[in-house]
Length: 367
Image (cartoon, helix red, strand yellow):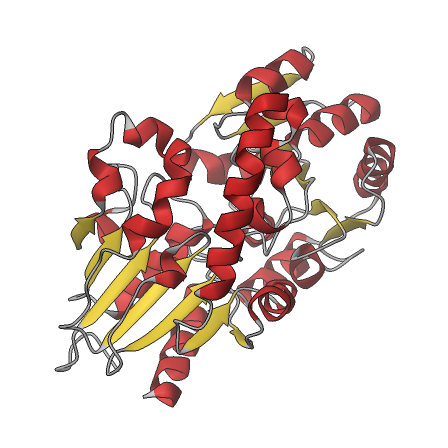
């Protein structure tokens, strides 16, 4: 199947509000299928790359709800209904990129639906407390949301049979798909733009870098506390609902940089003594972008980090999630002489061309 042949292709993505790891996967899908239509719950124009913006975008009813661009997560209970309203009768292939509800689109029997599942929706299955626990939203709101999210999890499981096949980003997520959906998934590691992210001879400076959405499961609070214990200045790139609480926790050595351009982030990678991933990630594209720039990574030794960071060679994996253990790992990393060439060589195995070729091969095998 290709975007240049007679087949009609539709791409589905949960929402388009920024260029994170999922959107970088979608960007390659758009390159593979340049004539494909794109369906999404919500499109905030100007927030994704030109490659994605050039698609013919079909947005759901969520697009028309009040202040949806900024508060779309508040409409989560409506997402199942909204995603099921799309019609794909005219398409031969639907390729969904899903971390929430995109995998549950309804397709006719003659249409092949392949889902690249970044994760089953984490807040419905295993991170309710992190997002909606009583300490985060209050006792009453948490009590109201618990049955709603439980219902969403039931719907998610009930619709797990809709895709004809699953692809996913790591062995870690493949095991979760098997556990929650009772489906097997082919692992295709997501793309890293190793041509863009590369060293330039910059001499690293004495700071730790975190590049992340500021949401609960990313555990940016752990990065702030551990950097304080290690006596390392911390720069944080990203925005999100945790910003206010994180600012209250941070000291003078923590700098919040907000959203930055890809070029600025690349320069920050190059200049960092260490790049940190303090939470358990499904895969984690940031550590590989950092490694492509030749910089070592300190990461919690769980989840996707076990597949992207080579302990002692491209960084340090921390078995204990405590800030004290993270701080000790940073001290160890600062004392070690990492080879930038070896670090980058590891990242090259995750390049965009490799991803595109594996996706193409997987789709052709299903044709």
